[in-house]
Amino acid sequence: MGRAPCCDKANVKKGPWSPEEDAKLKSFIEEHGTGGNWIALPHKIGLKRCGKSCRLRWLNYLRPNIKHGGFSEEEDQIICNLFVSIGSRWSIIAAQLPGRTDNDIKNYWNTRLKKKLLGRRRDSSSTSQPRHLPNEKGCNPNPNPNIGSSLTLTSSALERLQLHMQLQGLNSPFSFYNNTALWPKFYPLGNDCKLFQTISTDAITTTVYPLKLSQATMEPSEQANLSNSMITSLQGSLGISSSSSSNLDIELHDLLYGKESQFINEMESFKEMNIEEGMGWWGSNGLDEKSLFTSLDSTSALRSDFVLQEYRMGYDL
DNA sequence: AAGGGCATCAACCGCCCGATA
DNA sequence: GTATCGGGCGGTTGATGCCCT
Image (tube, rainbow, N blue to C red; front, side, top):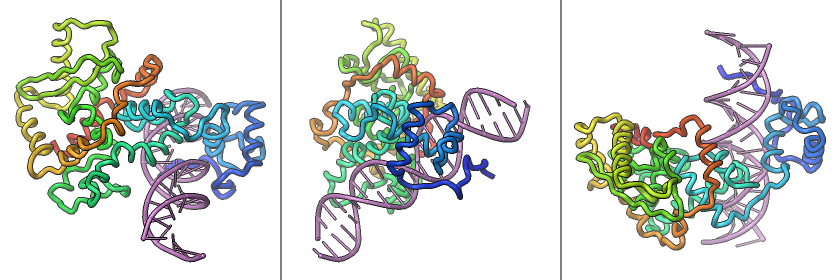
């Protein structure tokens, strides 16, 4: 049984807001503020609207200094960087873009930016549907049950993975970026990235992708220690020991690169993308790093191993 | 010109979480 | 400790306009 509705659904108006309603809401809030209670607000001003609807209207449209449309390349870049890093946390992403709302960014991502970045493979193989991406209804369009049945990542995770692997040079899906527990020592995606490092153990090879050290330098020994801690963390995330991870690695490799897998074909298509057009700007950004990490720290561990977990579930590891 | 499909975006829905009684 | 409430959030829907055939 769900909770009681926040308002009397039968007596509230739904649908587009009229200019009169906008004016009422705007003038009241500008004069009195929200009063700390959105639910009560529409009654105060005689609006037959749900309080949540008023809140949304104010935050997404009426609030001062709201920008609509006209996303710049820089904003595109920030959105993409953050989406790869933290997923569909639109409110956090919006916090990095003054004047933008989470709804606006979400719409922009879903309708344009995602296609700009991920949709290119359709252009490069114009005759076919994406091979095992979930379609818009969450169904797997791939007719091959052997492939479709096990590869059921959520679209968000898969998109992040795809973007991420583009960043990773198609190396490893288990990467630094997806293990945010490791982040505090670094600012991700700095534009003066210098550290490209491939880390190998007997079980897992992973690439530490462009990192901008928060400190000016890091000694090689410190880097090695960090590498080891990352491997340990990755293994911990996967719930594997170093002795058992060889099999995992093989299985993953088979899944991702084997003859039967179409996953890698998806990834290969990214290689065909025009780097200048699509991803050339990736890696530099204008983030307010301090405030970003403040918001990241406050968001319940960031689903820190979310992608890894989905990977494990999706591949039934 | 018509109409079918697609893209866009405002708005809604329902869930989660923290505050409070 | 628990129930209730409101705020906040992400996902989804529906209306609208545009484009293509």
